[in-house]
Image (cartoon, rainbow, N blue to C red; front, side, top):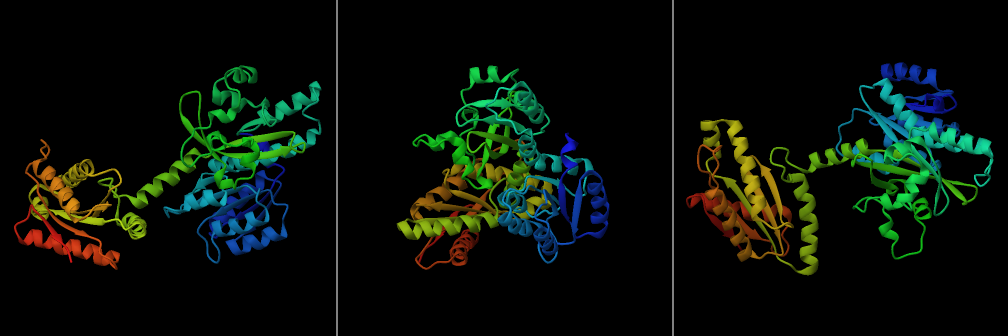
Length: 440
């Protein structure tokens, strides 16, 4: 880590817990030029306005009066380039996604590991440090004066991020991290194999790639400059074949003649965000969608159904005598049954159908563009697949009862599910292991 970058920066540190604020504040004060301390987001915003020369924000998330992310959003309106490090033990599934949206550079989870915090601060502030150092060199990148080249090289190599200097169409300088990441010995060797680094950006949903520009004459650097920070995210495969995710920081050097481009690795932050987002929308035992995700999907499907006048049907089913099964064979075996059911149902429906663990032994299947007759056939297919499912792990045959309905004009979600529930109750009353429907 290049700790030298911290010696000349001014930090705004915001933390509402007194003990944490006092201890961590002293640590930060010992390694930076100056520290401004605030006890909540509202005070932090006020102090930032008083100290607009602050170089870095280090802030907690969950605080009284004003949260850290809300404060940072206001600060970004004043200074969009300010780097931010968040410190939090906050377990809200959406907070990391919001952090990326706000433009957080790095994070350190609580309880604070001071080494991790310092590393995060360095990662966040390096692009700004780099820009200042390059300005101090005060030599044109076009001048091939040996002293200037060596100074630029030493500055680039001191950075912990991947950094390269480029004109609009060719790279002129790279740092050690760049060469290490791509497993090449020199810039010349790299350029012999790849004409432009942007060609290595993976074309995947949610990430920028030059494919977006294939029908235009726009340069990828200038295009990225005009994107918001949250959209300047790319995925690149390293020398070991491992995908890493980066935010792209671009500094215009010499009035558009050259650009200093810094890639900050946010793979862990992105993965944590994706994991929490998955946990918030899925049942962790079966891997199926949960109720919360169903509410979201149903809202979209009902709007599509009414706009295009398509049919929308629903299957609600539960496992027959599941309580008795649990009492006889134990809850661990009961959990295995639930996982088997999820596997069977997923194989029995279309890709765009939605399968939900509704709760306990109840499951729900939402069928877009399917009328009542089609839904009955799907339910019968699932019922038969469950009845015929065999596994050495299962001590007893499993069956299920099904209620099927279709959306009528004016139905809201509660009425829709209630109709399926009435049909399910009829199937149970008539003997179980069967499919019943509810139509008006």
